[in-house]
Length: 416
Image (cartoon, rainbow, N blue to C red; front, side, top):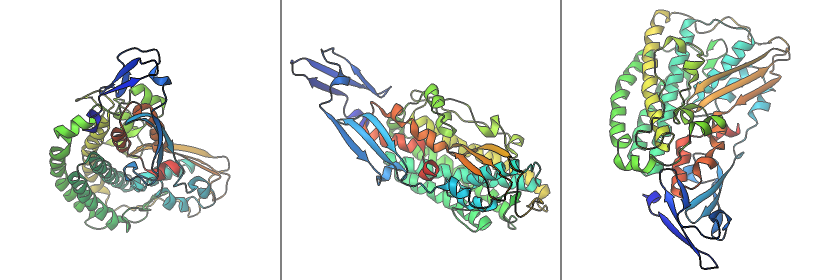
């Protein structure tokens, strides 16, 4: 593959001394093999500054990367963001609490249910709403975990496309369409749902919807076995991804990385387990972490495998939630709250939840009116993209494309 094409490079200096450097595949960095009078870091003659993006299709969004290259070797990566900025936080401070929900859909538009839940939990904490109908809690978990599977299918499908495998991309989107059909039946939309509202849900579950969810789970589990045979256990795929983009646990924690990016480095931290919200403390499921089965822990491959395993855990959660919701199917889906929310002046709430890309947090402060005085969102993708320079230096340009894919960024989440 590309990572093995350029294994050695010889530098000849003015005094005719030479230096041969070798590309260390396990660490993704080159090191000095034969000493010379000049250090490689001080020799700048072969460097180029190249822009990747903002229209580059492999960047998973409107992102521009400024690359400093030595031939095909990446020496520095500087991400430039802001091309998708929509001023969400200030816009939310000019409309009522309930009207903010549709704009939350557009933060991470691949996981809108999860975005809505985080904001709604913050508002409910702000107004002191501590108890909801049990049907609402179970339904929120079901919809959010379905959306998590749909989001991860985009992540692993497009990642396969980055590696050069086209069929996994088609298979992943085929199965994602079935989830979008379910969520469209539920909310009327295929991507921006506006379904989870403050105090409950926008509307009741359609008759027969829960049974269709069960049928999808029965269909989906064997399909993931086929997907894994095609891509996950493919020898070429493993060789291509197992030793690049290595992120140590220390680097991941120091940059504030969360979600599959953090867990891919072996750090077992998931808010659904460690700080349970909604009804997640009622379910039995595991938290997959990177294990470095085919190389160092925290590689591109580990982050991919965590998402694959998380889809299986989401299936387990949904099955338990389906069993739990059955006794409450006749309940209402909205708690008794005022139509115009006016939290007490000076009240403040911060809530964070586990979205498919990590911890999404909302800070909301009230001045006593029906419009939030301050809204601040904590983006998981922003923290995850910040450390791209650390894990890309010394790798190849072709490796950089895979590193971006393994981070699974959404620019709507970064720019907001």
